[in-house]
Image 1 (cartoon, rainbow, N blue to C red):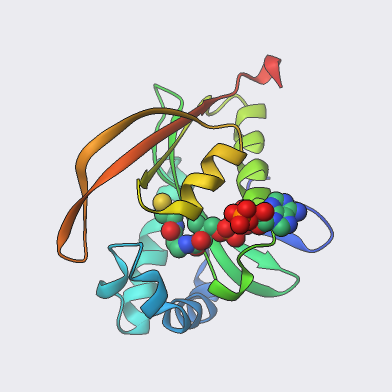
Image 2 (image 1 turned 90 degrees about the horizontal axis):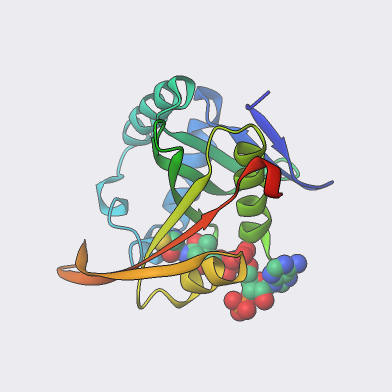
Length: 181
Ligand SMILES: CC(C)(COP(=O)(O)OP(=O)(O)OC[C@H]1O[C@@H](n2cnc3c(N)ncnc32)[C@H](O)[C@@H]1OP(=O)(O)O)[C@@H](O)C(=O)NCCC(=O)NCCS
């Protein structure tokens, strides 16, 4: 069952679905000014319908296996998102994206979500190469990659357009074969 990944007594990853549109949208609005500093899609989220369309698109991709989008639940509250923004099925490669509610940072929530989702898909033999791309100057995100066993493979020059500038982006990867876990 890939719809719910239980991490511990408090934390769960739940596959995105229509009933989560309102709480997800509220969380984006609450964190909008802050998230805009790191994520370039945030300025395009205005009405709840924008979030609804994103959810619908991701539900379809999730079901077909070309992407995955999970909401991170702490008890019954949505506190963030972790996704495979893109899956290359032939290459068994997934490109990971994530964000947290600002107030929920600094507790290891994202790291637990990351470990949970990568081992879940590695164990099933669906994905073996996991990739994190993050701006060189996104210190917290670089720490997430390094503290969770990802290896820096290189730096892509001016690869991300954010807030009026092109930024250099680090590319990290972690390879997990089912047998080597
Ligand atoms: C990137 C982001 C998700 C990181 O959040 P985070 O809370 O730092 O990450 P984690 O949940 O893994 O927590 C790790 C921190 O909690 C601390 N921590 C506390 N308890 C912990 C535990 N049990 N396990 C692991 N870490 C723990 C760690 O020391 C670490 O703090 P440090 O980086 O100051 O050393 C968050 O800053 C964010 O949403 N940023 C905006 C969006 C963004 O940049 N997304 C990524 C784009 S590439």
